[in-house]
Length: 416
Image (tube, rainbow, N blue to C red):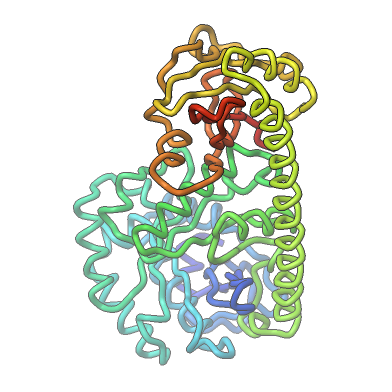
């Protein structure tokens, strides 16, 4: 069966993959996924439903055939109409968002796309506020034309959705130009996120960017419970993936099985976060014990003996990679004492411990302590210039045995 025959007979069926909110314990929308159907009988153009008799054709093959036959525009029109008509049969669709994919053909070649879309959703009894116009921004070369097109969709009330953010081809500079309502973070950022700190930080940075421009984050490709837990912890608003629900028929989108899956996810996330909070409390208690033990020794001696104290106490703590002391001007008055059990990053002269006399007055763990009435300050994770490892610096003020001057103890601890 050719792509042209599929278009002419309306041999298209739409499945919907749910997009969930664990915090709201609800389905908030669904992405429409079109499939060609070969060998299906009793078809009515544009209203095909899969009865199990036809053989499904994957979209990659379907659209490749359409491109070879020159019917891509016609196929995309049929897919949109079928998706809209099918979505109208979903129970409770009035409160859901239909995520519709739009390729370059629909926005650059088909000049009637917007008018047709408005007519189709009105005929189906839907509203533009129920539809997210989802695009893969890397597929479009002319950003200005794309923005003008999307502005027209926005003016009609449609939501704008950017797909596959975080892939190698996505252009982050287009985000503030398009001003999307929803950003979908690519599955490549999710695979392995449970144990990859760098990946977690990249994900979190994109979430923070999205929130600062007033958009909502969807994490795509969630296939395990661990991925779901970490994505939620890092700030994802919505989740999509096989762990939460496979593409399914319109009639099954609001069934009890999905509701049970959402409730189970919410319960797991609550337990996960309680466990994480308890871990952090335990970690902070350990840090406080370390700081207090070192301070106990430092407050008994004068500045000339600081190095001896640090070299004696540091080997007791396996997660502390180095310690050093500054005076109230931010000048380092001790050596940087390294824990030699912790390997250093081999990157040449860039990473080396600061010497006695180094100026730390521009570092946050110095000026925050002085400018704010704080007893202790812990930085966000950063790459230590002493070792090249990811660490946090915990700093606190103290006075020596003579109580004559104020000093600042800095302890670099490895990020777990």
